[in-house]
Amino acid sequence: MKLKNILTELKSSKWPTKVEIVQLTIYTLILCAIIAAIMVGLDLILFKLRDWFLNV
Image 1: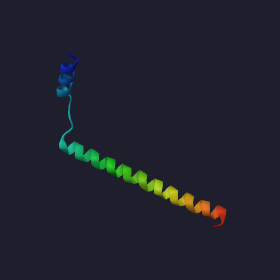
Image 2: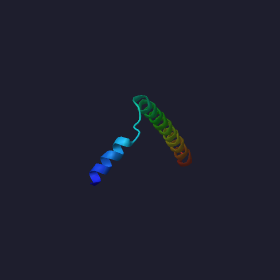
Image 3: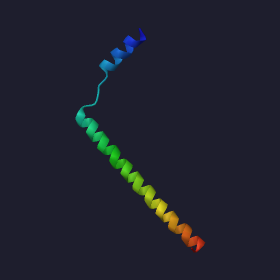
Image 4: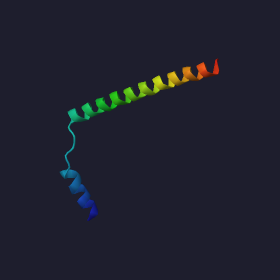
């Protein structure tokens, strides 16, 4: 009985279109790239800051 209810609910759900999937995938990849760039920038800044404090 529960399986039938689950299948009914899945069929009545609104699934995203192919265009929506592509758009959301692109948005996600752009956001990941921005976050990665910020993290790389912070890593480089902190690396230089550490070397400056240690006078290496």
